View 1 (tube, rainbow, N blue to C red):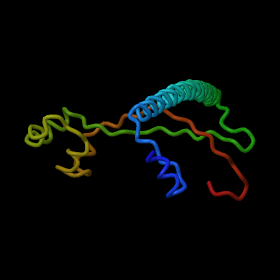
View 2: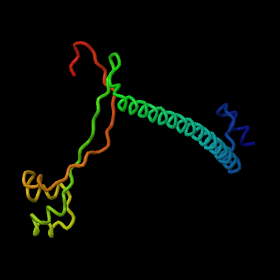
View 3: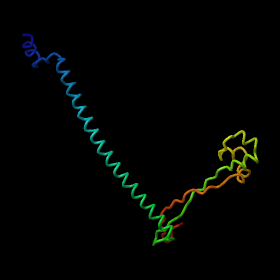
View 4: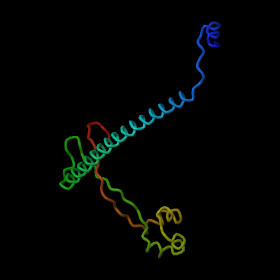
Length: 153
């Protein structure tokens, strides 16, 4: 009866009282949707990861083959072709010859025990250290450079 009075006074139907069952159903439906989303995301990520792995493998194979071809070209002396040439670079690293360093600087050697180049250089200076270092040439690397008329080299 109070509902009828409410409708006559306001012209609106009263809203039903809140329902715990409705809230529980909505929460369960939301959790189902979230689970579906998680499954779709996992599936998509797995597919993308496979594609990335495939592309990365192909790129590594191409780089390896290009390095092989460059090494063959260098070995045969074929260093230039049209506007493409091979620049040969090798990194040289400096290491301390421990025996010579120990003989020349026994106190400093005892202080360092192991002689990293940077620390030895900081301790006695580059000019004094150079005669006691060995230069070791690293492996050669190759890169392609393009020759264009009028371009700086």
